[in-house]
Length: 278
Length: 282
Image 1 (cartoon, helix red, strand yellow):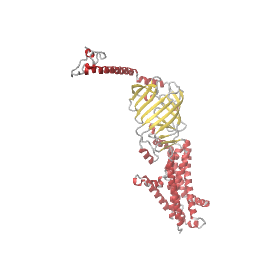
Image 2 (tube, helix red, strand yellow):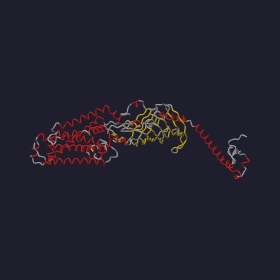
Image 3 (cartoon, helix red, strand yellow):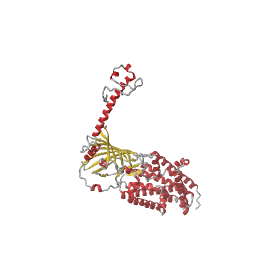
Image 4 (cartoon, chains in turn brown, red):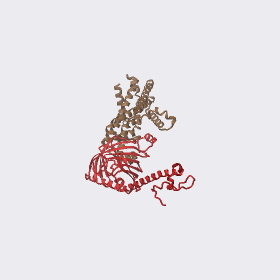
């Protein structure tokens, strides 16, 4: 199994498209950091404009933690589309290149084959988010220094320096779970077709549709919303409030984990029954 | 015959109608009658006696209050406080801020406050500090340096201190403060409470405690109470949060407690100290 995972990882990292996601994250993070370096004070003034009448703010507000939070906030909605590039290609790519037969004539079960693909895809997702965390927090601290983190949600939250890192770690952990859900869905679609474009577009379509449904304020569809996984993908933000509502996070965690298992088992069932013709 | 209002013989109003429906002359003879004999006309003597005493007492109270009030010249009192405060050319003080405001969830913060007359202020903090803008330096100049009108209202006891309540109305249109009520301690020449109605921030009430042994007395604790009626606080993070906050669109309310310690007075602070800008001075 270990070998299978390494083989799959090697396949993933030998493809150029794998690095597109890393490049995009680096590019967007750099753009945000550069923009905030020059215009950060305006950003903060705007964010705190109503409190400016009453309060004076002192200290290094525009620090690496705030930059990392803004990057996470901005990118978390778009990372799914980067994950798809790899997830959609994991099985369909084998079909396109005709390597299914070669792989499956070897003494490995189809179940293990799919599991290795899933694990390799999850490792890729983890590495991508780890990369994002390192460049957003690392570069952020290098350029902007440290300080308290201010987060504006239903109110202005100010987190002390020693109260920030664990929140980021848990948030990134949760984002990994969200992205793994997207990856699982793309692998499921990938198992159905023989061309990578199909799963990528299908998963995009599902995510966009779910996001639109979530955004609609229509009572008739309100009851559906809690079951849409896209609705739970932003639950990481609950780590940046006081007090943390762990029950809300646990619910979202369960929904996402449930989706991952369902997508995984469906993929296994479909793939086991699949007639390999290419 | 002309009678004085306080003449004891003048017990009743000469125009009170008698039983017969005629105007009764309440003469000395009538007083000597028994109550039964006096009838309604006699009862009027008693009522008028009480009325007279009450009116006389009220008159004395009003007279004495007016005379007392006239002794309190609010402008003089405020000038005295200002001139007392102006004896402090500059000061530095350590401040500790505790915020309990509905729109802010922040840990306690510490900072160093530099003040130089008339209104130079600098705040230095190792970490983040969120500090109330108004009244932080408790300088009376903030309010009294511009033209204003002051009215003495009353004297009362505030936290076991006898204080004079003075209303201050800024006369300049540009002033953010519409009306301030000051509770002034004339014994120590300090302001113990300020209640200001402002254009931008609603009502702010500041309670000041003086436990530091400085001369002139400078506050050791200031409690700021905020109550604004509307607030569309700025956010650019997520739409759903804006919706959440708009559901309960309420004003800024809550309190901020600032503790002042380690005063250093008249250290001849250089002006250049105040020129240096904070990293983010909003």
